[in-house]
Length: 473
Image (tube, rainbow, N blue to C red; front, side):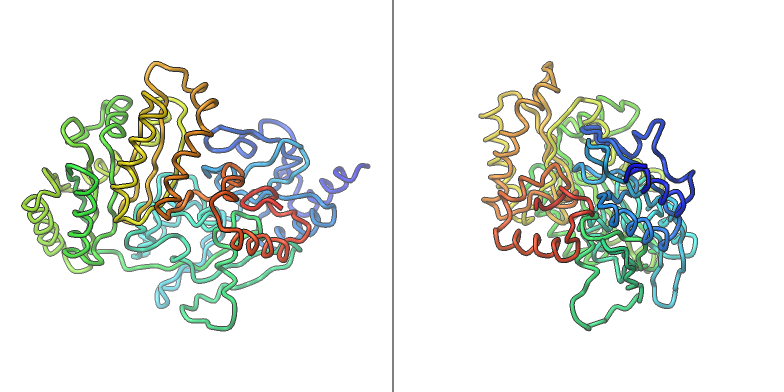
């Protein structure tokens, strides 16, 4: 038997024949979320517990076969699918989906990597707690993937990225050893904080199998408003006013450009989208209060009155119930779906200091208009934490596929050069994967890249964990 045949037989003995997939339609594991690339796996292996993960990693390491850890496969940068060689094992963790323990006294939950984010949110809410990580793919993304990419989402302005929500990890190393760091401690000053190496490493250093995550009390009230704003400068002014008026009660602050909203109206005409015809930008903001709804409403009304008086908002609507609040948030969540309906597009997940975003957008909009006449800008995102999804749609009535093929590289070069001038980041929350790996070398300092390569070589000396992603050895 060949080496691969021997390995497959060993893997079947570890996880069961039904959990080693080699035939049939494997596109759910082999094709990336945006359908930009499809690879070919030697096998899709689905372990059911941490010990099985460790045994699978040891077997693959012994056979010198590289592994691609995968959660819900909802990533945006081609970072969790196999290459085209047919010689990589996809390590799918979706069977490891248990919520192990919920500790109300410590305000923590210990959860396995394959647990779907929405499932965790709902379980915590049912127990009387808030797990605040929230993003568009929450119905299919997993906690392990959220940690592997350090996912952001709509509540970063109050609760931070996934990194800030994690107190401990369980990880299978590239050698198949298990590091159990599931202490749940908020203070542990005993050397290097290893969890931060694995969070955001996109499966290139080891396999996250479980995590201890922070919980919060459920708010007594959660109110949502949609504001029309005359400019990005006004949106930044409104954000500052919201911080001052609502303090830690400000849990979400999202900006949406007029063209982005027009795509929602075009492709989802059943949705009501206030102000989209009259306002250059709209902001959806969320205010939470742990005391009472009446106090929350009073604070929000005070903010909106001040915003209208100062001119940083020209109109506003406040959701009167949960259904209306969900409808307002659904506008924001529908933008990437509407953009996909409009056709292939060039995505940029960038971060800039909040105060510098208006100048960045004005300068880069003008540069793109001059260099690529007719290109349409879909600008929206998490203004509260400085993260824009600054995307470029092909000109109307043109071949979007050809535009993507011919113009993606020069458009990326223009946008990323502007990001550099504003001391920003070319990846705010989506990660690097393989899509941005070579770009990283152009925009990260040589010292930082050398340190990253040293870490990779130290933890994965044979380059078997998701090779070719993040750093190029």
